[in-house]
Figure 1 (cartoon, rainbow, N blue to C red):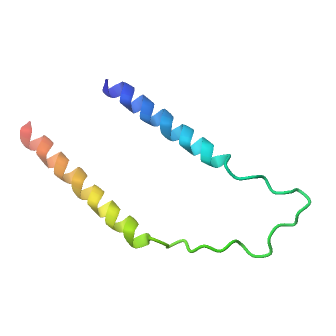
Figure 2 (cartoon, rainbow, N blue to C red; figure 1 turned 90 degrees about the vertical axis):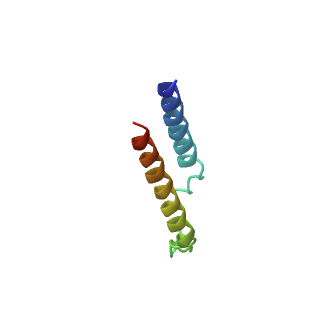
Figure 3 (cartoon, one colour; figure 1 turned 135 degrees about the vertical axis):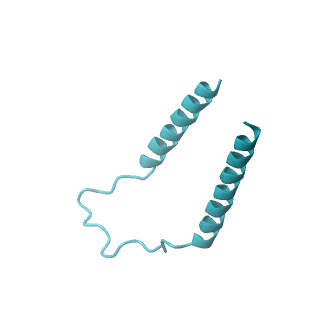
Length: 71
């Protein structure tokens, strides 16, 4: 059962990535393109991502400790 979950999860992630890769319209070949790159800060919501990563790391470490204690 665990193998089936892993295969399904992997297939789902690949499918999501392929869909997002084809989601944007292709630019007109005769259009020279924008002079400056589109705006948008790279570091928006960076604090939220750091907190989420720390919480996820703590959960994984806690589950690993519980698993080792039961063995």
